Length: 134
Length: 127
Image (cartoon, rainbow over all chains, first blue to last red):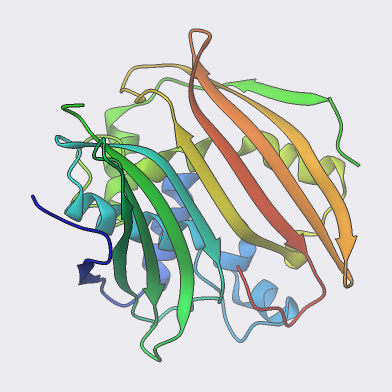
């Protein structure tokens, strides 16, 4: 694959977040903070409803990155996410990104983000991949 | 104030059913095996720290997560996590907390994690 700095990565759109998904994620991840599960608790915290786990958005980004940098060809060395805006049930997240830099040794530095249906960036991320052949 | 105090926990073996449930919940169709954010399962010590600091979960916002992958985790392995509080300061009415964790198997570090939280009053803008 001949990719260069500045290249954009084809977006990956995830289906809208559901409350059932938040419950499934809470059980699968062990993050059972009621702000993700309990409407009353979330409203007392100042939100109109439960909010999605930030780590669910990060998992979407990881999946998006793995789509473009498959595990059998690239080793993921580093992944960082910053959670910018809350995501609610019903929100639909689109993952996008670009290659920020490529080193001579084939290391890729990638920027990615999730954007909601309103075009707002909810999570920003950066990742570093090295080719498995190196 | 950061402290040298480290909380640790030995964790159950990584089971295929748990990995499948995590992959399904995260819609990780492009991540064969154990997805990159699997390490989020090893945040028990962060929550113990938060309890020790008497943080109200209602006011807790997860704002930053970072992983450095040293070696892949594999099904059947029994991880151990060690977590330190590395940052605790106030800024503009928010308490900033950061934890660093090392997830190791058989004494070999496999994943380093850094987690950042804000503890806020309601009506914030992060998760």
